[in-house]
Length: 81
Picture 1: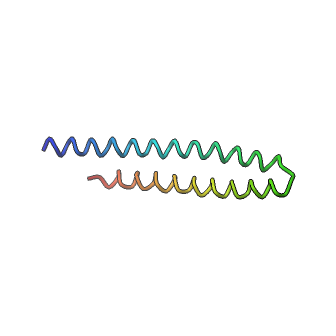
Picture 2: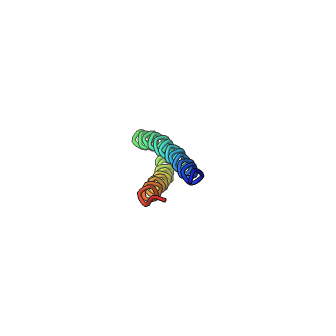
Picture 3: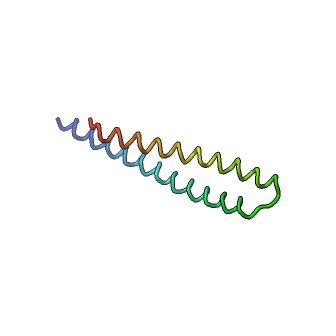
Protein backbone atom coordinates (compact mmCIF):
# COMPACT_ATOMS: atom_id res chain seq x y z
CA UNK A 1 0.00 0.00 0.00
CA UNK A 2 2.83 2.42 0.78
CA UNK A 3 4.32 1.90 -2.68
CA UNK A 4 0.96 2.72 -4.26
CA UNK A 5 0.67 5.98 -2.34
CA UNK A 6 4.23 6.99 -3.22
CA UNK A 7 3.64 6.00 -6.84
CA UNK A 8 0.56 8.21 -7.01
CA UNK A 9 2.39 11.11 -5.43
CA UNK A 10 5.28 10.72 -7.85
CA UNK A 11 2.88 10.57 -10.80
CA UNK A 12 1.02 13.63 -9.51
CA UNK A 13 4.24 15.60 -9.05
CA UNK A 14 5.44 14.60 -12.52
CA UNK A 15 2.11 15.71 -13.99
CA UNK A 16 2.36 19.02 -12.13
CA UNK A 17 5.92 19.53 -13.40
CA UNK A 18 4.78 18.79 -16.95
CA UNK A 19 1.84 21.16 -16.56
CA UNK A 20 4.14 23.91 -15.31
CA UNK A 21 6.44 23.41 -18.32
CA UNK A 22 3.45 23.62 -20.65
CA UNK A 23 2.19 26.77 -18.93
CA UNK A 24 5.64 28.33 -19.29
CA UNK A 25 5.57 27.44 -22.98
CA UNK A 26 2.17 29.11 -23.24
CA UNK A 27 3.48 32.27 -21.58
CA UNK A 28 6.55 32.42 -23.82
CA UNK A 29 4.55 31.75 -26.96
CA UNK A 30 1.99 34.40 -26.01
CA UNK A 31 4.83 36.90 -25.56
CA UNK A 32 6.39 35.99 -28.92
CA UNK A 33 2.97 36.24 -30.56
CA UNK A 34 2.45 39.73 -29.16
CA UNK A 35 5.86 40.76 -30.55
CA UNK A 36 5.03 39.26 -33.95
CA UNK A 37 1.72 41.15 -34.07
CA UNK A 38 3.54 44.38 -33.13
CA UNK A 39 6.02 43.86 -35.94
CA UNK A 40 3.20 43.07 -38.36
CA UNK A 41 1.53 46.36 -37.44
CA UNK A 42 4.70 48.40 -37.97
CA UNK A 43 6.09 46.93 -41.20
CA UNK A 44 5.05 48.26 -44.57
CA UNK A 45 7.32 46.20 -46.84
CA UNK A 46 5.28 43.34 -48.35
CA UNK A 47 8.07 40.79 -47.80
CA UNK A 48 8.36 41.65 -44.11
CA UNK A 49 4.59 41.61 -43.69
CA UNK A 50 4.47 38.17 -45.32
CA UNK A 51 7.23 36.94 -43.00
CA UNK A 52 5.22 38.19 -40.01
CA UNK A 53 2.14 36.35 -41.25
CA UNK A 54 4.09 33.09 -41.43
CA UNK A 55 5.57 33.68 -37.98
CA UNK A 56 2.16 34.49 -36.49
CA UNK A 57 0.65 31.35 -38.01
CA UNK A 58 3.48 29.20 -36.65
CA UNK A 59 3.16 30.72 -33.19
CA UNK A 60 -0.62 30.28 -33.20
CA UNK A 61 -0.12 26.59 -34.04
CA UNK A 62 2.38 26.24 -31.20
CA UNK A 63 0.01 27.99 -28.81
CA UNK A 64 -2.84 25.64 -29.82
CA UNK A 65 -0.55 22.67 -29.18
CA UNK A 66 0.21 23.85 -25.65
CA UNK A 67 -3.48 24.45 -24.95
CA UNK A 68 -4.36 20.92 -26.13
CA UNK A 69 -1.64 19.40 -23.95
CA UNK A 70 -2.77 21.31 -20.85
CA UNK A 71 -6.36 20.18 -21.47
CA UNK A 72 -5.15 16.59 -21.88
CA UNK A 73 -3.33 16.74 -18.54
CA UNK A 74 -6.33 18.30 -16.82
CA UNK A 75 -8.61 15.58 -18.22
CA UNK A 76 -6.23 12.88 -16.98
CA UNK A 77 -6.15 14.52 -13.57
CA UNK A 78 -9.95 14.52 -13.39
CA UNK A 79 -10.11 10.85 -14.35
CA UNK A 80 -7.88 9.92 -11.47
CA UNK A 81 -5.88 6.73 -11.01
